[in-house]
Length: 470
Image (cartoon, rainbow, N blue to C red; front, top):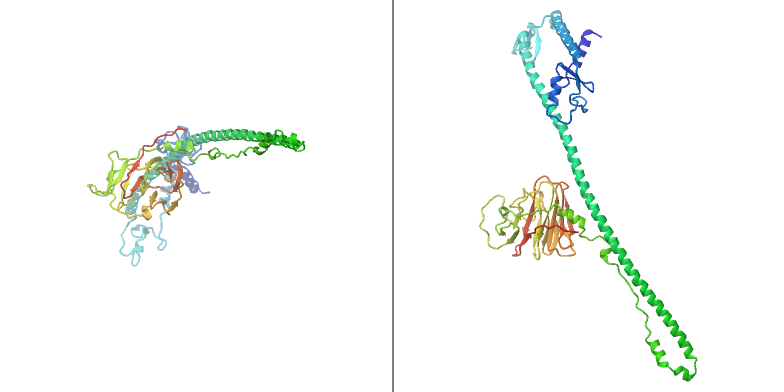
């Protein structure tokens, strides 16, 4: 192998993988990779817990590297050899024009090509900017050197971005672990309540079985006693029927009365209590978990339609025939009698309750904060909201596709539960805490409580959410 090839290969290996320049004050990591001391310090700047190797990305201990002075001296020697050989090569091997076999002394700036003076004759390079190679080389050397610092800066910037990405990975791991721990606690809490309810239900079922067994046993005893009585009476009647006339008629009233008045005991039938055989719909654990995320939602008067009167405490809204004197703003609904909640939710879990009582027409749920204030009902496309409504006596879940709801009991209040990250919205009947309808979607902007009020005088009221014991 030629000395030039070996020297060139050594120079490639002697480059710092961070700045791509010759190694300066070289150090060696615990994984055997070499870097310039200033580059490794810059790569680990602002890092506290994690120190990845810039080459293999394995984690290193801070300061776990050693100075490689021998490698530094070898690099200096190789640099001197390279300079000496380059100078000798330039003196010995002047480039010649392939066409004219003469020394190349000119440079064409348009074609970026080294030329011999005869090469500039028409038609080649006609009208081009041609100048001596010394002048052109000086210009382009300065130009190339001007790229060195920006390229180094770009390498350093990318290294910083890579370090930031490593920090993001650590942050992701920490957030996932915290979320998993939180969910684990919630599931443990739910499991404990479910187990408690299960034991209570099975205990009530066993008590009911014991009580029914006692009554069935007593009923069986009554039948056995009745059979014994009937058999005794049968024997007595048979004996009486073969006696003489006088003996037969003596005390006949008693035996006839007993035969005619004999009645069997009633058959005892039972039916298990329904609540003893299944978990009640208002499961205690579920209620407690929902109540943990309760929100004191208030109404935003700045969004209320002019025919809507919002109470001073911002908890109640009523439709009035006379329009209110309100100032115009882009947030106010002007077509439908709608008002939004003051609170916007772009993360987390939230729960609130609304009292509807005997109100004949209403709509409630959530909508995007960017919902058009001048849109017509029902909404379409990007203005879609997730709501339940009472309209013309029918309960409807209004989402991407309307769904008619068959409710066993007319709700006097509605509970709304939002889990932003999971993209879930659920509605509950406050009469018995039964589940009405769920929605699943992907949220990308803030959501607000949504209320559409029917054109009647009965109010729609947001309840103060109370905890429940169980």
